[in-house]
View 1 (cartoon, rainbow, N blue to C red):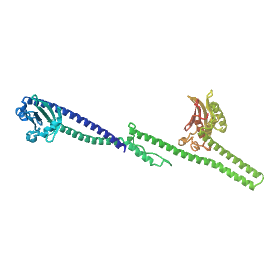
View 2: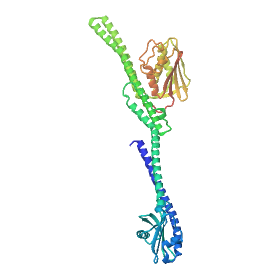
View 3: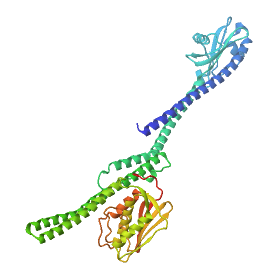
View 4: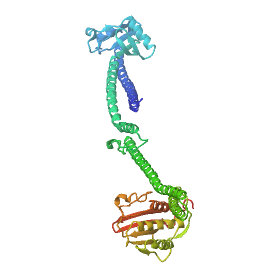
Length: 490
């Protein structure tokens, strides 16, 4: 069964059981009360009639004599007298509805025997007479020795109980119908967020999520995702899950695009030196086959030099790619103490001769700033940042290298007053094979792996690298923790 059916069955079943118990208890209580009241009335009539009979001699203690001397016309009253001299006789008075035309009816011998059998020697009892119905009867002995039996009909009690049960049954049925409708509406409204969740999940499940660009736009409506309610919390949780899945799929798509671009860029970078090697190899073979003497040797030497240069270029590219792969795996770093101040001085000394048309300056503290790291790789970071600033700025640009201590971080900055970085490529600046040829007026450049390698090395040291740029003010900032925990691989 559905949850709604089960809830309705449980609620209506429990309420029905409670109503039945209440009806039984009410009927029993009312019946006992009415029986008590009837017994009190009957005892009162019985005492009064017994006094009347006691005033008559035993041989005259008959029903006719009693009725002649006393008015015993109580609606529905049953009266029977039995004495050794007067015999046994009885009468039943009509009730208030005017039964038998308002004339009392005598009790037959069979009726009197039924009354005697019902009492069975007891003082009180209940007897069912075929012609008159059910009576509560009480027997008392008069002073003259006669036995007096007095009774009152139980019809009124039965009628009241029947009326009560009828009212209870009708009210219970009406109440259960109203309860069923109210419960159904309440549960249906309460479970509406769950149906919205199911519908949203079904629509998402029908979307192709295994390939291509995926955008999950389906969400549980805000009205059905109120976290203040239990069912609304389910909708809110599903929306949060869908947001996470959507962002994960977007990241997957982005990684796939980056991988395709990476493969294309790597192929492009390798194709040029391979084509050069092939061309110079063919040229050398042709020269050797067609010419002899110094000219052939000179041409072959030139070709071999070009082949060597292109081989070195491919070697550097492959080494950079291998370094990035090992850094991604958390390898390739050998930790020790590194003096960033000394590292900056050496890096600037190495970069100054490569660009004499630039203005170089350095700002380092008097005291050394020491961090835990790989000295060789940190030197590579400094060299790559300085080479990046030198390559992408025109002659006359001032490049400043500074080292400082800020809180728990050692900070290394490379600043230049060049034309700045195009905002459209700033987000992808640290990506592999990223290029910004037009943004910084670059005429030549490398493979586009320098900043990616610098970022990987810095993050391998538990630090971070950022860039801020606008025309005339570009700064690359490297932050390395001075006292980090034990690095991976240390």
